Length: 570
Image (cartoon, rainbow, N blue to C red; front, side, top):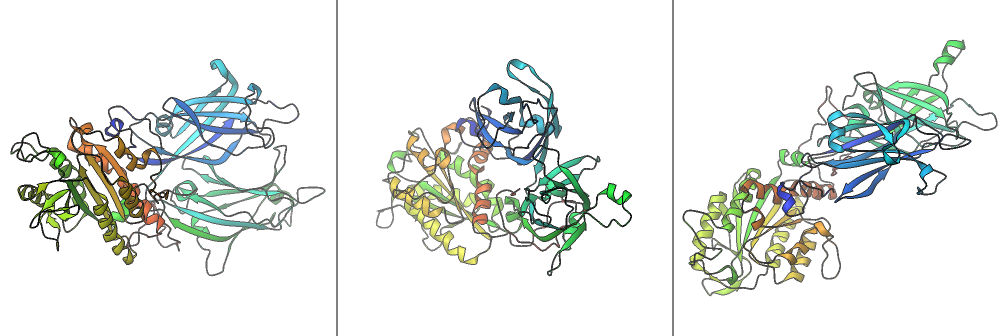
């Protein structure tokens, strides 16, 4: 994830990630590349570099296209898009020799260009000249980058193609066929969607199944024309045309019940010249699997309730609540930091819980009637029902609790984490996406049971739970960053890694001058992905059937294999 942030964004002060607005697919093509080879044409490949904290690193690269100065690459680059960031990209084109990795020789470099992801997205189709070193033009070479947004309520389709009795284009062997699928856009232009592998010496090829997003395949329009071309591969780049056919996604979906969908592979020239010409073979779609990709809102709109629990630190280091210097001091004119953080986060979460009842717990205090230290008690002192009515009820329970308890210690948070994890684990037997938990821990210092806390978080990462820790006051919270997995994978004392990163830690002081909304936005930014990640791992779909991507025609009646995922696999 790109950590380059605007200094004014809420996450910038913390060095943490900000919420991803969307995912974007980039497709690249080049024209008039320099010819670096003596006997053949260049064998180009495009490398995508991203800039992170001033350093360029390789994100991904396209396939190598043999002997071609006007390549259209099938590889799709998928990037997270952040509206508030200047995400710098660099496309570098190289002439590849054999299977070796790219060298440093200048004569391998065919040109490059720098831009931002925002520029590409704004233009949708960006055409730029390629440059060599010292801002020198690489002849008339250009690169074209197409951008497409992948919507949250998207899906992807897995297609299984084969062919029978293709024309033989070779003299001493059989054809080496591959298939290309192009989407025909509204303006009549053609966009390469997928290029299969080459099947050597075979007139009845069975190509590997491939996955492509519905946005890429047909812009979620079942009736959009797809142009499909079959070629006989030539290592010099002069592929022989075998035939073509036109298809739609609607036609493809007629597959089922053991039946396959077939198309005649036609060569228009042969059709004109040959009297008894029937076809140059047939292309067969032998199977189709449609997968849905669900978003956070799909789960919420499907009825998923988010249960909110707050855990408050009542250790002695907070200071006597009767003293105005105490972090727990109740000022009639201004809420203290505990209340500010509780209200900011709670008011967002309460919108996702229909009964508006929230669990409110405390730790680190001696509590009545025996005044024994407790690290897990209900602040309304009702162990049978620790829930309060709405956020205001939590605030009142907190204020009523303070005079009745004795602040003590130490700062142990593992008991409450384990309790909420156990509670959410019990609900897991329902096997649906009906309930997810958010635990907000408000503390004034570094936890003293760090080993037990790490163990509890690793266990909790397997449950429908996210943990937000807000550090209140001016303590040194450096050690608390360990619990937030942004700087590396959190592990238990025995070395077991978390299944998913479920903890977000922020010091409240970073938001003292910001609005409560800024704090809520920062600490809740990772929750949507954590929710989707959990249900994806469990292969649990939203409760009611979710309609597919918005389109002029519906894909809702297609047989599906519903596999939730964080993003489409293309």
